[in-house]
Length: 202
Image 1 (cartoon, helix red, strand yellow):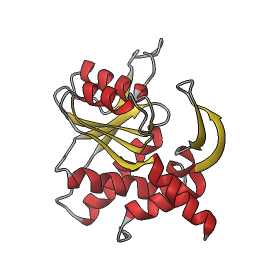
Image 2 (image 1 turned 90 degrees about the vertical axis):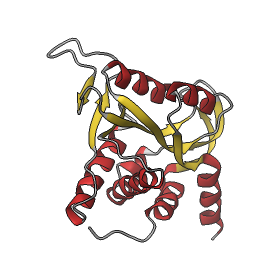
Image 3 (image 1 turned 180 degrees about the horizontal axis):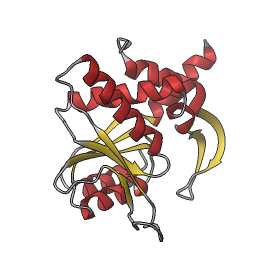
């Protein structure tokens, strides 16, 4: 796999260019903000998806985390989960010692047909997993995924988001839900904003 030297820096540049907007916005939490970050514009971008997977793999390696799978609440986490799984397979192909990280998606409610499962994809009791998300504001979607993974018998060893908005109650709630496991981020919203401003003034 032809990896670039620092996927994190390239991902920040892309997020700032195509996912960050200034203006007046109403957030899913009900609050208002003078900026909005739509990470899906980046995570569903061909190169953005690749960078997302690589940057998260690097972050996990930096913290010595080797999960069996990554998962999150649909739908913001969906492309992030796929990106991590595919990037892990590509790295394993290049480096036989690199671990595979499978993926799973958490429904907002159990489906009323078929198997009635809430978790789709990887689901093994006792397995170590990380919960991923795109943007963390209140942390509600990440917390819901953490709870669902634990109810399925999996061990959550970390939660990871691409962008943390650093809202007053967000990180404390997430750290409580993580129960001692680390809550990690690739970027703060301020870092993305600063990169966006630099690009606009260049």
